[in-house]
Amino acid sequence: MAINSAAEEERKNAGRQHHHQPIPRAHDPLIQKKKPATTSKAAAGSVPASRSTSGKNTKNSQWQFFSWLNTLKDVYGASILMTIVLVSHLCVRFIPVSVTIGYYLREFGGVKAAEVQAYKAVARAPYAMSPLFGYLSDALHFRGYNKAPYIAFSSVVAMGAYAVVGFSPVGLLSLPMVILGFVTMNLQMEYCGLLVRAKYAEKLKENPDYSTDLISFVQGGGTIATLLSQIMAALIIQNYGTRYVFAVCVLPAMLPLYPAMTNLLQEKPEENAPCCGLSKGTSKYGKKYLTLCIFMGFEAIFLMCLGMMENSLTRCVLGLVASVFLAIGFIIFTPRMIAKVAIFFLLICICSLSNSGAEYYFYTDTAEQYPEGPHFSAMFYLTVRSFVRSSCLFIGMYAYNRWLRDCKYKIGYLIGIGTTMCVRFARLLIFSRWNIRLGIPDTVFTLTLDALSAMFGELISLPNQILMSHLCPKGLESTVFAFMAGAFMMGGQVGTFLGAYLLKQLGVEPQGAAMESRQFDNLWVAELLSAVACIPPLIMMLNILPDKTPSERIDVEDDDDGAGG
Image 1: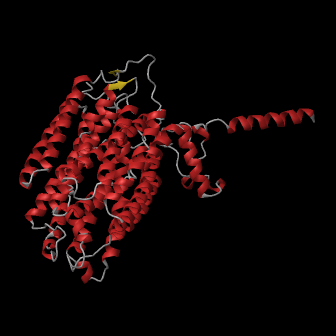
Image 2: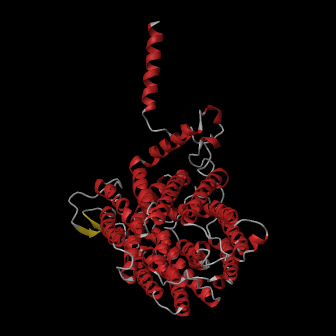
Image 3: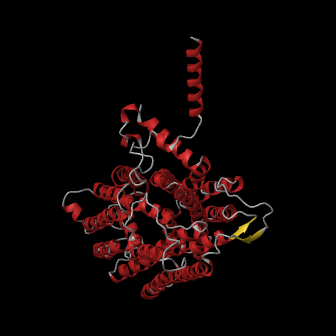
């Protein structure tokens, strides 16, 4: 009896010790059981228990979710998850600058649709300058810290911009001052978002099998934050005015200060580090990456100045020339794989041909301004549509994790880009008002297309984040992540310039004036050209994207060309 009791006690002690240890990957209940000899591709990451073959042992989906979070905590650490929540979710994704700029400029008065698009492109200039910011944080440290000082500085400056714009009556500040305020706000969101992305890129490369799960955590929380911000913005705009949205945003702009001041980013400075100095991690790539960063910084400033020009044709021509030089810079200064992916991102954004300025007036003009229009309220335009998009983003995340997480990058992009093109063709019906003739209400038609666009767009967004993380060399995560983000944003700016020129040539220049129905006669033509413009990226994708799955490592350091050589 004594022997049996002792054995039982030993088993209990062993169970308690096992309970407090991180879950070994081989015994993780969230992972489908495979043979030990399988590669990471076959045993890819933790997944929701609904995918597991041992689903009979799970109690309910709520415990599956918390088990999934616990696995992420064990693999990547609680500090990085908390940093993502405070910075990426509650600050970068919660502050609704991009959606409120149009409403603010409308209240400002006298700003045409093409000008709204151009000013939005100028306001997003910090996103295009992110390579310079990224290299600066990788190369220059303060007391051994490469990320926290930059997060703190950008947050303090942005808080001042939110306060000035938010507490000043509309019209008191000049338009250039307002645009400068928007630029400062976006500076914080891009710099803080970039440095946090670089941090979880480090962690992701250490455990690539869990990459899809970590990116799903980032994207899922960001989607919820965006939805809440849209609801907040709609309520404030409808009841008080647009400027008060910026006044409220002073509070979430403070949140990045906490992880910066408490080192939740887990930076490990050397003892007796100087007040300011160069980091060692950038020496391998040296002058080539720095040259490209400076070049991209000047290009971003150049594009920002182009956005303030009135001649739309000049904006387009010079923007395209700048894009060609940027592509050449990627080829010369970066490894071949990074150059190919960056040029692909640049092209896909240029071909977007944004019509957002005209679309905004099309959907929100009142019955006096556009009698035949949809006449969406601010609540519907911002909140209801955002709720539908956010819900379908989660469906897209689930679909990707359930069926496509082990598929090659090209599959997700093929489905995503192809569906985007189909949605744009379908939108011809609402812009030509044929949906009314077919008996389909504007609300139903718009929400259906929003749902499809969000759901299938996530099949591009998730692998985008994973691919960019895999392309980051150790010690230069911020820089290379910023190269990709810069390609996206510069391409987006040029695409916006092209879209604005197209609208002007087609005579689509609404500005919220009375009886402006004729301004929307050719909007469907602009949308048709935008749909056709999706074809070149779809063709180029087949030869550019790596022939790998998200759980496979991509070694760019041994590339035979570029900066790494």
